[in-house]
Amino acid sequence: MSGHSKWSTIKRKKGALDAKRSKVFTRLIKEITVAVREGGPDPDGNPRLRLAIQNSKAANMPKDNMERAVKKGAGADSETYTEVFYEGYASHGVAVFVECLTDNLNRTVQNIRSAFNKHGGSLSTKGSLEFIFDRKGVFIIKRSDNIALHEDDFTLEMIDAGAEDIEFEEEYITVYCSMENFGALQKKTEELKLEVENAELQRIPKTTVTLDAEALKKVIKLIDVLEDDEDVQKVYHNIEMNEETMAALS
Image 1 (tube, rainbow, N blue to C red):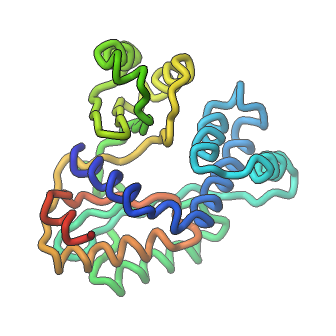
Image 2: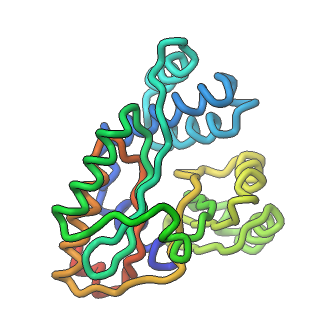
């Protein structure tokens, strides 16, 4: 988990979310729309929608944007998005898992395949990366004075709610749980009124690949291209982000 956590930290510090704010909003709006179509427009009775709204607020999305997305999802003429996943390998044996929401499957698969091919990678069959990634709940929580004073109590509360691992950083706390305990941990963060910057199900690598600076930059180019695609929601990889590779990205 550590390599994935460091990667998340790097992206926060480099301001990647701010630099791509419009893309972040687009992806969150899609998630709200899909959540409403699946479970209705009431967040109290729709956990997926409640989570999407929570993440949208953490990303500083204007309230009007969120309300329009909810109304759009509830409308009879709203777009129908299909969730689709792609698994493949970048150069140097790096596993890459791509999650998409699309209204055009042909366009999406063509774009994803083209990105892999142009950057020295290749798509694999569905399920080929199951042995590399675990599906885990990941909560990024902003540290507060209260948590700092009662760190042990906080840890116990999280474990009681189903947390498997907790990483304390200077500004953030990352809490991991199984997919099955995601809902319980989400309720616990709401109950404790914690400032959750992001909460989602992620694919955490069980095995990682270490790259030198040149190889890393080549693989990151593919990841950047995939993340820039309008149909892509999330991209996961199994690069080990050690001190050397972090320095290469700075």
